[in-house]
Amino acid sequence: MVALVLSGAFVVLPMIVSRLTGSHKPTAEKLSEYECGFPAFEDSRAQFDVRFYLVAILFIVFDLEAAFLYPWAVSLDQTGWVGWGAMIVFLAELALGLAYAWKKGALEWE
Image 1: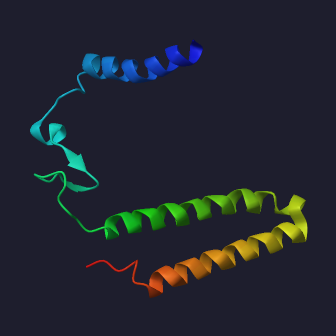
Image 2 (image 1 turned 90 degrees about the vertical axis):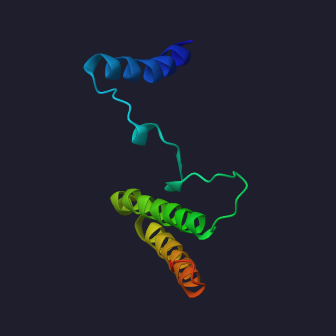
Image 3 (image 1 turned 30 degrees about the horizontal axis):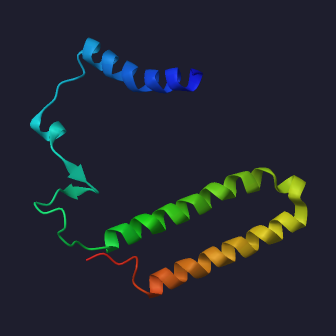
């Protein structure tokens, strides 16, 4: 019950506050539909370049990898050489994945 009330409050309260403070000023640009960084298509079944999603997936993968480095660096004194070796193997796999994506042209944008 508490979760339901809190989640409802997180949805409804910002809308109420924006209307009361005057920051709710809809314009044609704000109300226009957008999807994935480019304008919506006339036909929802139209084909488009899949490389956009490939770059997005690669960004997420490498961003998460960078997020793993901070906790590892903070706890390195507790994990010792075993933790250091495990992270070197992890970074080597990451470098191999980056080299593979680079060689396949996944990072090229026309």
